[in-house]
Image 1 (tube, rainbow, N blue to C red):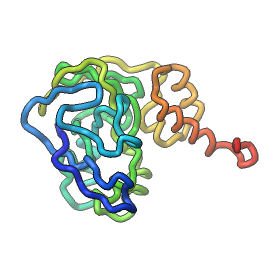
Image 2 (cartoon, rainbow, N blue to C red; image 1 turned 180 degrees about the vertical axis):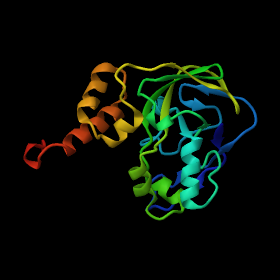
Image 3 (cartoon, rainbow, N blue to C red; image 1 turned 45 degrees about the vertical axis):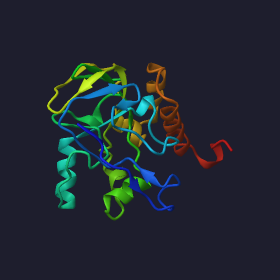
Image 4 (cartoon, rainbow, N blue to C red; image 1 turned 60 degrees about the horizontal axis):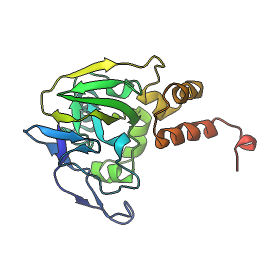
Length: 213
């Protein structure tokens, strides 16, 4: 369980804001969870990050280990900018709208993480955004349905899985656009960002002559 350790200064070519709260590290105490995320956590670029639909970010330990093997380095909890490093749960293949109880909180899977220039800069790896995108192990953003506290070692229990079956990975890759239409019909509370993602996938699937100007 991770919160901001320190803000990083960023060059103008990476961020107009000039700083980032991506440097998250584990803490040993329980942390309150509010609608905008964990106490002690925050975002700097509020135009592109954060908000109630991106309140908590979870990443799978198994995916982190695979990346660690590929990069030949240890990727500790928080390296991906995540709040929750989760083991034994396929985070990137969670269903949009899936609900998790963690500690005494209730969280709902809301969106994939979209890699950005800040993530590239933070990683120090060549072509990192392209590689992360190709793998599509994005982790999942979650919204807070019930406030509470979380701490290291809390069990993550899946309480509900929507029948539509559209996963975080499905939404990120846009490989099956008909299923994304099903998501919009079945989950009326999805965020505007998700609707824009679906719209972008739809435009990529149209012949150029059919794409609206």
